[in-house]
Image (cartoon, rainbow, N blue to C red; front, side):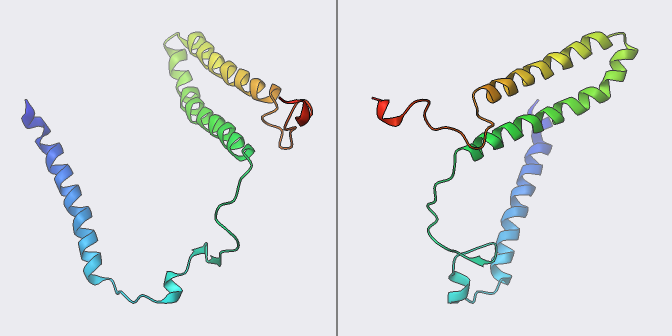
Length: 135
């Protein structure tokens, strides 16, 4: 029974040997000439300005998560829309279409929730009341 996994084991061993062998070969071939210019910190070829400890607005993360949500939506909907014709041939087009519409409805509800809570507004208010009233 375990003999079927021998090909997987051989594949993993060859992959590991290839990675380690490439690293060792590169270590022997690569030139090592350290210099102050090579040790300097840079960002995309530009010298750094200021500290790396900068506070970012948390709205960047919210926008990124909403983008990721709709990116995944496209990844799921495109293959489903392409297979919809096959479901129509089997007489299951209505069920498949309802499944797609339920999926879109859940995503629309999520978008409406984010919109209603003001998470999609780039410039928002920090407090609903004055800060001195918060105690």
